[in-house]
Image (cartoon, rainbow, N blue to C red):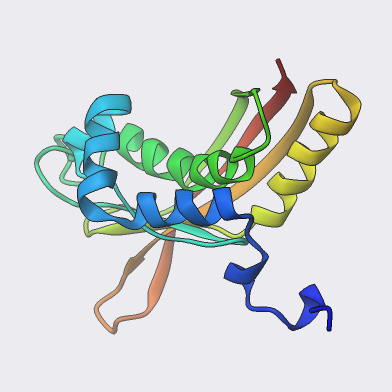
Length: 176
């Protein structure tokens, strides 16, 4: 009996390499070690990947002295770093087990909507879109660009999510 992908949970659709990657990146100790070695500024700011699956990634940035500006809000660069990571972790996962493929940001747009004076969470829900771009790069051998959108939120006094900023990162993928 063959399973159809429509009936499987999202995690069952990941390749073994992608599943191994998500287990490693969700491990707090391994995630912190990765940040310290590969992304020391993100490590310093306290940025954390809180969830990642086939379609979605969530990344937090604390409202703390390490990520704060003099105006008592989260520094725009700290927001951009967390936003980038929410798209980048999906891209990294999509590359697992696919051979040598380079990934590079070629463009970024940002909109800052509200003062970020609390812990913020950035959510990208375009995992399938990045997977298609990686597959196209593999099939064609050409560079393929894909624009990934992410939004940042804080909780207001009533506990409701309020959008503070949104970003679009254009990623380019090319086989080596």
